[in-house]
Image 1 (cartoon, rainbow, N blue to C red):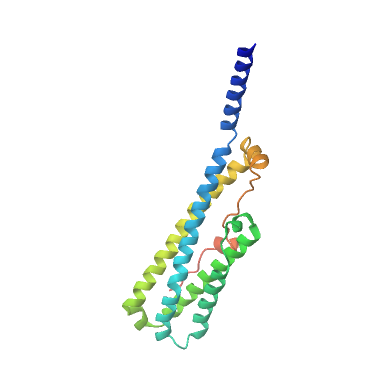
Image 2: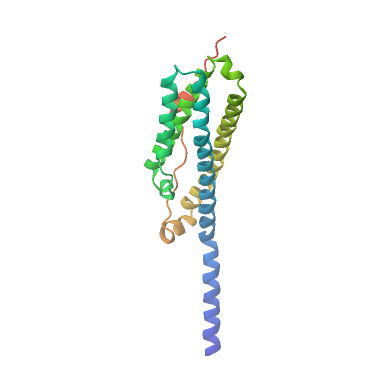
Amino acid sequence: MRSSNRTWLTLGFAAVILTISGCGYNTIQGLDEETNQAWSEVLNQYQRRADLIPNLVNVVKGYAAHEKETLEAVTQARSQAAGIKATPELLRDPQAFRKFQAAQGDLSSALSRLMVVVEKYPDLKANENFRDLQSQLEGTENRIAVSRKRYIDKVAEYNKAVRFFPTNLTAKFLLHAEVKPNFTVADERAVAKPPDVKF
């Protein structure tokens, strides 16, 4: 009788282990970690950009003192972007995520306007310090784009695991996991419109 109970206990234990391994628990946990890691890299690149901006603004100020409005817009946009605390809760709150994304978009827009101002000042463009800073800023923008792409890919993978059957059962009932917000385009119509090129 005891060996029969042991056999059933062993079989029951084996069934539980097999069920748990197929429920997606570890997969979802792993994807959550990878998503958080990708998000950290996005924040790292945004911070790099925020650190470079005061240097860029100071270099431009020396040449373009009367372009005060543009320089102030960059400084204000940087301040607003830096004022949003990127906590882990941000990834769970789509509205806060959109606010963060909008602040970063405003900063990108202000930097674009600054670069247009720079075109007016040939001496500034020839300045070695400015060229180095501009190069670093352009490199940072590229790094931000790559980091955002990696985050987008990881969120898509995570969201599939949270939504697809049977792992959605584990996500919903065991982990209480929700889909994570992803980057979006502010104005899809503007992106779809081809740019005007005039000579």
